[in-house]
Figure (cartoon, rainbow, N blue to C red):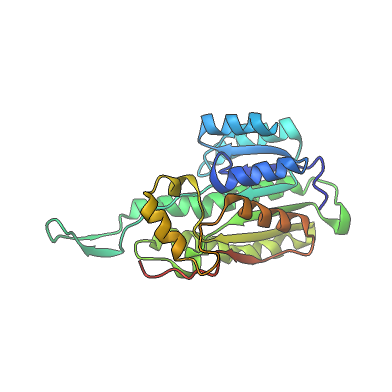
Length: 259
């Protein structure tokens, strides 16, 4: 795909992996719309890269529809969608309280919230973006667009307390190939990245000994992943026309321990 003058939408684009990807796309001449709930960070990054910020909640049809409408009014129909919006939590499926010995289980509303954001939110953006891409004239090899999703190494080896997070990310992995097959006759490619331990704002707040221990757990290189490395893989998936229906780990060969 020739990126010059293309339009893109990056969900969760105000920080972390999404921000790095938005910057990388803009550096290639792509007109980028950032979907996020972090208004200050999103607007600042949009100003930096000459893009547009749209406050979007991926769990809401109305919010996502309004975001795509605003992005398309500014830049035209997107040919690129990168889904980075997501969050996590931690709770054991069931266990005893250390305080009083009472038995508790994973709060079901908390479980559902992660599924709604990470899995359903990702699919919502895919479906609505793909419907828009169908209106575009096909380019080389009949291509109309490219979609990149963000899963996690936890999709394959989730740790204790990650039942909701792992399930949501495994769902993103599981739907990648079926969606690529759904859209193959329309010239829209779909791929997913499974990042390992990356140096995102969440980890930036962790104490240095914790960061050092996490880095040491990576087989090679023994460091945290850099958001720019995620962005580089996302660009490869977008630019390489033969890259389709794939789920790719980006994790320094780590396999997560139980805890």
